[in-house]
Length: 369
Image (cartoon, rainbow, N blue to C red; front, side, top):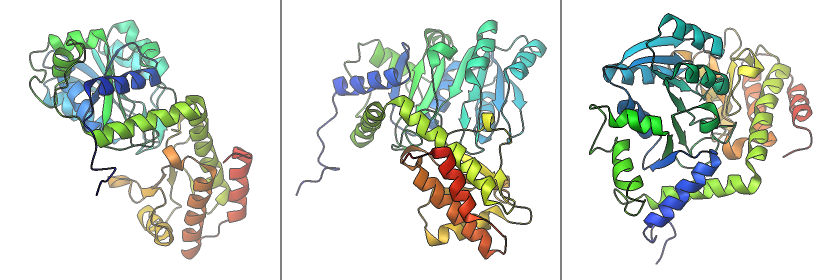
């Protein structure tokens, strides 16, 4: 008996290269794009370990938990790290980055998360890229959450290492990811004696054995299921149109914010300014005296598959996350999530207005899906 998920023909090197080319078009980049066979942490760590070392002075922007992780990796590589941390309810500004360069002229590497799904903020990469380019530093960007939900333009923004994953706004699997690499970044890695070589973390291996070889022979057997799923994600985005996909995510974010405020009961956006809020996910602050994790558990009791979660770690008591990305970036999903949260608040004795929340969602979304 055949099975479509099991009896797959081997994925050829030519097909692998075609998928890389489609990802490059999605990013509007002329840079080399390498698809890596693992969750996005693989290229995220590989890019840092490839480009940073004891001679590196890195500005590490922290707007959420991933920025903290990048700082740990950079220190482990022996880099001198200057952390630029801002409150998680806001975004970093280009002016703050410029001030960091003024205070530390030796900075030659900047790490930034575009959209922090965990905290619900998004950062102005284009403006920050201008500052980084002025100072000639290498620019590393985590665009895992933002790709598909908002523009990601490595070439236009001067990003040298741009990592994406399929599992959020692209609506795909977590087991495959990609990174675009500029010529400057390849040169930095080639000059770095500590860069991983002959390693699963190594981007240089992909450069030397795959790209420089004309993309004729793969380093190892590709994961067919994940690669075909990534291809399907890109096809779906192409068919809907990238602008339409991004508009759908923006509407989901705006409707969630408006609906939460209309719901009442003390529920409010965690990220203060709408301009700083990520379109991939909306974080909400639980009402005073209400434990966010308990509230989410009550909301999920009736429908366990809703894209709701409490904040991670220390944020678990105060933050609620509505993950409206990929197929869940729809008016229906936003309404159901807000209804579930409102019902859970009602069970806890908090007065809410479900009808007002529904109207607010409709007012933002109009007659769309």
